[in-house]
Length: 297
Image (cartoon, rainbow, N blue to C red; front, side):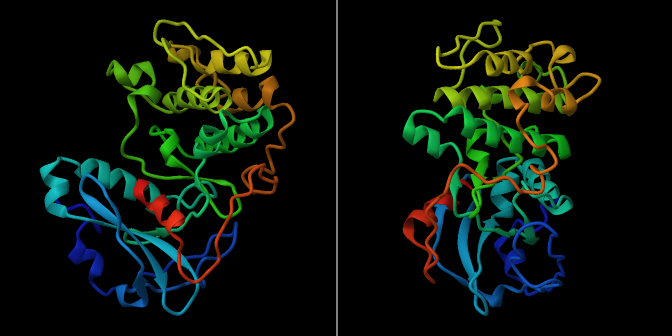
């Protein structure tokens, strides 16, 4: 069968689809906006993936930028990626969530100009504890509200306000996969908590942990006891004993000592001030450095 919205022809066919404006964050388009391909200017072709391309586009009648993903049905089928395409689009279509990339129409998605979250610690060695805490809290809320199962650094972007936006729910790196996934034992939301443990370690250390399946974690000396305790409890190989996957689910993670200073009601409402301020170019033409972001879509 065909993946919905996956071909150039399908994406280019004029069709109006009504969308509601989310209650959180700035409205990207008027409420009940209708989209047609002729309403947009394509600014460039940026990056060619395994079976598609992403175009940064701008609405002709407004200043808003969007990301438009265009895929070849032939290549999707040839590479046996129909399920991947369906999963990603169904997640984006069905869930309006403050920490997920928003899908407006077919594969027309919101533009997130802050780049990859992990480009910041990579450039500076590693995050401070305060920065790691802030973004770990947002990721935790994202996991609590929607099972992701595909968490990896490249999928965590920053919007213009420096809050996280998660994208691409079809592939995950083996390095971030829970042991039950690698060993084909079946899996559920527990894999997200495992990935969170890897991500926290990576953010605060500057590199992912090694020898996890052997039950050994070598922590850098600068990590404090509380965060090491949290990471250990998230990286329990037995998923029935993994923090976040027991009786109280996400509440167990949120109640951990490392998160004791977090206002959990404010996090999903995006009320907390992000510790990173990305440089956003508001010029009419999207700058080359921003175009680079689209290579990961």
